[in-house]
Length: 619
Image 1 (cartoon, one colour):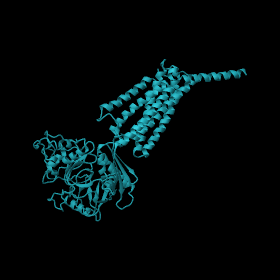
Image 2 (cartoon, helix red, strand yellow):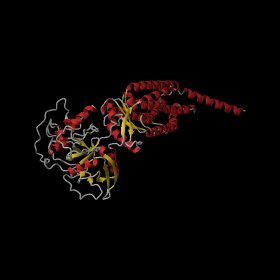
Image 3 (cartoon, one colour):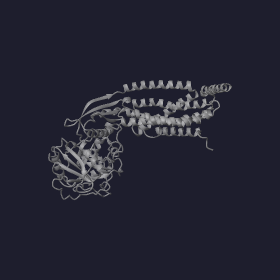
């Protein structure tokens, strides 16, 4: 039999709340890694804050487009540090980088332009799939020790290996096209073995203690220390021997390599004078790439040798635009070189016809078109199965990869957590005093209901803590002083919900109803007010989060989250507990429940109204 309107089964709601708490803390303690504590922001654990002042090369004010593109590229580099809570925000024509924690020193070098370069693709690209070596204890060939399982050099799905016939030439005045997605042929003088029975090289000894474990690196495992991880990646994935090994060994190294699952420590840190094993931005395909420039101490490379080296970086690009292909469907990207960039490009394409060249942004392959024929002059085109959005994105990468802005570190400071912790202690002290006064007032004014208020607030705090820990793990949310201020403000919002409910309950008792019968009626009349008030608070928080920047976002986020959790506590804890108390003979006693005053006020009002009615009748 269903309960009357307004009445509930308290055990059902309290059970649902217990399940939520158990689920949250199970995720906190039995999933993920790290301590079961929220991640702290820069003002609570210290870090680095760098302010970059942008200057356009022509001396004019930088455009919004250039600044936004710069912010996006630098933000990618900041995230590459592998720390949470880092952010890059615009402040006029400045970019402000904040990085919390011990790794914050790396932020001081992030103002340099994004590293865009052109690299020749060595051999054939391969799809990113883990390869299990057939021998144990071997290390990838990139470190010239050991050998992975032999393989028959593969190419990305949907592509064909081998050479592509050259085009008939571009029309007069139109730059010759590059065909996107066509892999280059391997060096015919050193063909890749396709014999699966080919014996592997002899097993290599384990690497010395002071040498990186390239076996682990090629399996995507790096040190937790950012500096060590970069050193490991450079030693194993940028081994100079890659340019001297035969094609079969290079292809085996590529097959043994697996793209990093998380952030690649080489992002923005690769050396241009060394080869590189890397992946595209989607981590779908992996490549072995030649150096951009020959090593400074390599006297064997002639100045006009472009058989392996492009000698081209983002600084050689003058402009890049996207548009529709006038000779077919789809879109193309046109780019112009400046200075001697056009001459370098012409020499490279002449020496590498029917080879792939990779456009590499911060160590990741953005595009890897095939060179159909020598391209002379300062202009060229990249064509393929581009959508308009893809063509626009590639043009932006080429145009802003070497940002058209110079950044000057106008302010670089190491932020100590001392001031933040002092502010936190002061804030928590103020919040604790305020919360204590709320507790005393509730106990004095509501008695039993005040105890239920205190219990509800404590349970709300327990849920908030678990959610903060999980958000720190899942989305990198960090708690800062602004966020704590949001939580302190939310105490008032939660208390308001209790006050609305309890005052409505008192109104029902004044009208002559018992505690038990007053609870369902008071809840029906108060819950709409509670929902409306919380909806307004959440809407204000959401709008503030969207339009705000920096730490104000943290305040808005925690205030909005607390408002939602307030509804969970009021509906699943406070109301059911009050309903249970109303069914207890002892707890429903007016002296215990705190409703005696309201009950007496109701009796006095009715007595006064009755005496007035009697006086009127006698008159």
